[in-house]
Amino acid sequence: MARVLLVDLHKRFNATLAVDNFSLDVAEGEFVALLGPSGCGKTTVMRMIAGIAEPDSGEIAIGGRRVDGLSPEHRNVGLVFQSYALFPHMTVEANIAFGLQMRRVPRDEMRRRVTAVLDMVDLSQLAKRHPRQLSGGQQQRVALARALVTEPDVLLLDEPLSNLDAKLREHLREDIRNLQRRLGITTIYVTHDQSEALALADRIVVMNSGRIVEEGGPRDLYQTPRRRFTAEFLGQTNILAATASDGTLHFPWGGERSGWNGQHGRLDLSIRPEDISIEAEATGPAVVTDVTFLGADIEHKLDVGGLTMRARASGRGAKILPVGTRITISLPGDLHVLS
Image 1: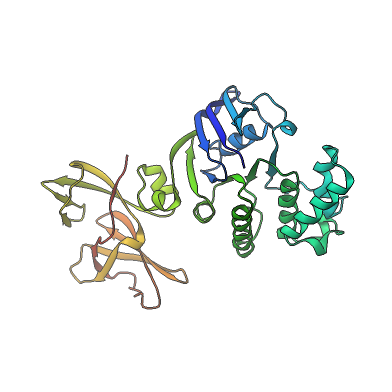
Image 2: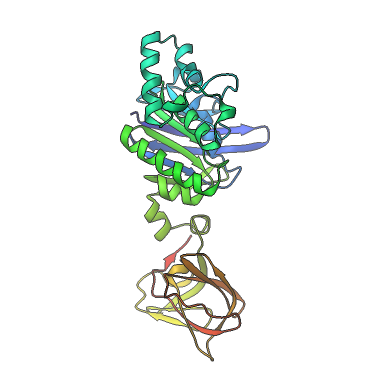
């Protein structure tokens, strides 16, 4: 375990500012997800930590030791790529042992470590196979084992599940989280998939345009986002332009909510689809424009005087209201002011 400290990192590629004024403190044993759209700078941050790219300015420290300027092999980090990057001509055990060979680890110690990590990722029975004989999930386990066998201070994972099908992603996601908890290794995980970030991370760092937009625990960021970008990127949400006066919120469709103790004036509010209740009513202010069956959930798309909203209900008892049904809307869930 090692603390990772990033201080005021900047990185430019020609005219593009990829990372701008980026500072982050990752505690020993913490699992942090860097979450954001493609091109937001999250992979560049990870590559700078690994030493594959160097910052134009700023500092990187791992375990209290400044490492910017050091080559990757002197940083003691384990790196798992999206593409696995396995050597096709080597067996599973040879792929895993490669990093130890480069470090001139004694043969007996190398054999002990490879055996232990193969058992850790449940690949002992496949040690003599080549990558072409493995499934995508098995190849990803080999890549993870290769990163762990060197006993790194920090584990870096760059979109490691994006090439896998949905069911396998879910299975390996659980494996990665359980393994990280068991080892207690400091982990930084790069992803654009909000469900992965929510399921895996102790803390999520939301990024856009090379900067940190907002950071916090998964539940806090999902339920009480402060930034509009976070609310919209981290799952689905409804953004309502309401007006607050004299302790009452006034909504665009004419509805009101009393007992408001927050800011006054015009506000942008976020409310999740699952926090909206709808009921059929002939004189209601909204109409159902689409219905989507999502298995455990039913989602209704609504037209509220030109404003598009989504409401979601769960469970076997969830009603399906036909397209064209007029409805009333109630907001029993929490509303959050966005900036």
